[in-house]
Amino acid sequence: MADQPKYNPLTASTFFDDGRSARPLVVGTVPRGSLAEDNLNVPKDANTFPIPVTRELLARGRERFNIYCSVCHGLLGDGNGMVPRRGFRHPPSYHIDRLREATVGHFYDVITNGFGAMPDYAAQVPPRDRWAIIAYIRALQFSQHATLAMIEPAAYMAGPEMNRLQWRALWIGVAALGLCILGAFRSPAQFFHSYLLAFLFWTGMALGCLAIAMLHHLTGGSWGMVIRRLLESGSRTLPLMALLFVPLFFGRHWIYSWTQPMNLPRQQLEYLDVRFFLTRAVLYFLVWLALAHWLGKWSHEQDRTGDRRLLLKMQWLSAPGLALYGLTGTFAAVDWMMSLEPRWYSSIFGLLVIGGQVLSAMAFVIVALVLLTAYQPLGRVLQPRHMHNLGKLLLAFVMIWAYLSFSQLLIMWSGNLPEEIPWYLHRLEGGWRWVGVLLILFHFALPFFLLLSRDLKRTGPKLALLAMLVVVMRMVDLFWLTAPEFSPGRFHIHWMDIAAPVGMGGVWLAVFAWHLKTRPLLPVGDPYLAVVLEGEHE
Image (cartoon, rainbow, N blue to C red; front, side, top):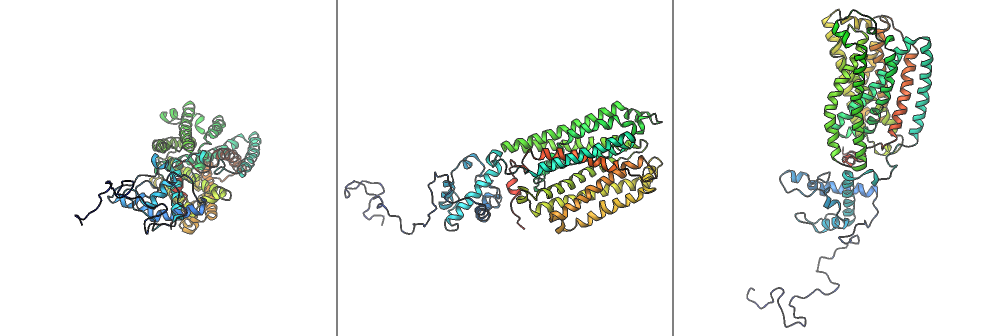
């Protein structure tokens, strides 16, 4: 065969009129067996879909992508699938500029005919499924590079129900605070005692939101994605709490016994100096406000730009931010709560208060999240697995609070020191002991055993009811920590002990709702949002 007469490729020929030996195909013919029935084929430079892109098409595309593509390209389309992890060549990420700017016709041609080391999938994937995969690839690309301008402006914004909540909370808060102000003329001491309780509860709520937000930025996880806006809105109420601290400072003479001449060690008197007390409070709020401001600012900027570098900024700030929160939160607990009895001290008290703040915030955001799921857009994105994760965190925080509370009691009771035991005696005499029993039963035992249930944690309304109980018991716990100092050995509750937290809470919720409705309810610029909102794979 090597020696037989033949034409070499592209050699001249005198047999044909055009002088070429290689003959062109007859117009309108294709090689035998290569005719494909593909009525959805488009040119490689085409950039429009020949079929409508619907939610059903995207769901089909995700399913086909996970079967055929994710083994190499990864679930996120970042080229880090299971095959390249085992030593094979990494495919390019879909998120590089070249592929983000590539046409849909290019992706269709690659799936149909293959490209480089990638074989063709024309036999395995029918034409409609190829377009489904391409639509899902585009969704993956948008998930890490989309900005708020690319979606409908109102798609993830709170609805008109937020306005109704805001105004109702504000009117209730103003009315309750008005009653308390009238009560202050009759009993100023009781007014400031109740005001302190309300201030500690709602400031702790805002600080707990800030702490959980920083924890999420530092560790990641889908659990924090669906509550990030609630946490940010809660932490952005700190300017309100800084303003509400002013009446507390002017009413210090009715609250803190150390403002009067007392026989205390010199170092303690210097620490409890009024000017130093105010300076420390200003420092605490400056630290908290700075953390809330920068985290909120970068999160909002991420919504606008989708810049992945902002994730690192928030992570880098959250690490020292949690340390600063622990330090300032401990000193604030000493200044505002432990100094109610200046001769008593506990090295674990600051951690106990911080643990309660985080527990309060987690319970509150669960209640708020479940209430918001009755409306769009959260109603269509929240899934049982999200509630399950939040329920597990609530269980963990309940256990942490119980561990710290029992540790403090065990250490002091076993030490039996005269400087420490009176604090507990005030809370175990008279009617106060029954408040302690109430805390054991409904702050720890009941939530602990109910939260062991997987079904309850995955059922939003049931979990919200339990979280509401925890919120109420957090208020009872703060009442048990502070009120016995004003009436030791005798249980006493005043109507302002209820009206003041309700009034301050109404104003707090109004400001919370105002912040919540100014931004999308989900962090639309976060590159991992699409993965978080995917359906369950259980």
